[in-house]
Image (cartoon, rainbow, N blue to C red; front, side, top):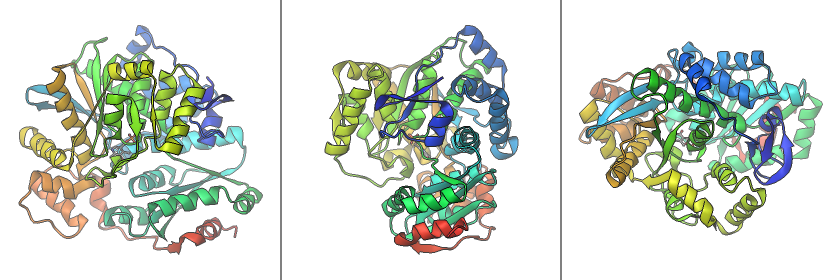
Length: 502
Ligand SMILES: *Cc1c(COP(=O)(O)O)cnc(C)c1O
């Protein structure tokens, strides 16, 4: 299995190269040249396997330059019972929504209580093995700029992984006290966390600059190290996400909720378009998905795109109660457009260039038609998000987070509009305790808000009587290990001294 760049078809690499490199030199994203089609027998085999077994099957089809042992090693290290609180890292809970059953795929049982763990727990293992194949013997130095959640998930993923070091930069006043404490208490011998005097963009620009500063790269090279990245466009983050859709389908068959071969709809709260794209890729493997329901918050650039075929990021940016979806450029959409334009690198490049220069593009009529047929886009605002949390809790005693609530709300809109009651899987992307404030306001608007986020967690537990995930319950009692704050200009020096090679 080889991989192409979405913007230059002549750029062809192995899976190890795609993962080690992250992004193509031409700025495009790596995509598999073909998607194997699973027949009935393959699916029937998958039905009998557990999550890890299903993951190994999917990975072995896409990472053909990895041995069985290597894939098995990655999977066994990533999806442990210990880290995911059980044998199934992605369990399904069913609720009743005004007479319609909804199946909620809980993707937040990992160490940081958000769905990014599903990919970031395994990426470090893919990456170290990929680097061994492509840049033998070098240690990977991962630099991350974060506005909160990704940094913590990456730290947990890379913690104590051999031949890696990770340094996370966050804006000193740009993350919540809870997120800050989550990062500053991070355990592991190869991790480091540092605040910068600036906003998230400054942190990101600072990191990009370090990557491209020749004198810094030279110091790394002299010391047998190489920079690498863990961001969401890396193929090694997308591939693990395909697995949970296939696994969810198998679980639904085994639970008797659907018959083998039945179609399902998937509903995904979407930001960067990675999670929903993974469901689309699962359908290319043969998973019978009828509709991809793309849920957004007030930053509804994707809703408009699905309705009109015009992607236009020139619009207001809203800060919402579902912050991980506060995004105006959904990077992974590029991969869908490449596929829908019959793998045309020239067409994809044209649209992506237009996005860069004008902030917008319009896709062709045939692409519009496919998107209209397969996708449904909808959005809701903060009030509707909270009302949905309230309703689900009142009627089902089920507590969901703000991102999941956006998906549930948009799914309701879909049913009201279409009457389509095909069995559905709703991706639930975070524990409600990660967004305690908004969830508390949603289920108990009259309760005075406690001052600290830790107290909000306690209050939410008191009112909802739902379990607090262990990693969040423990946090209050942990002492911070990191407290550095540096100027943006001092970031390169900070990296070199942390690595001990200044
Ligand atoms: C990252 C994130 C999303 C958005 O996922 P994409 O793959 O970027 O579309 C949704 N919910 C939560 C909680 C997230 O952390």
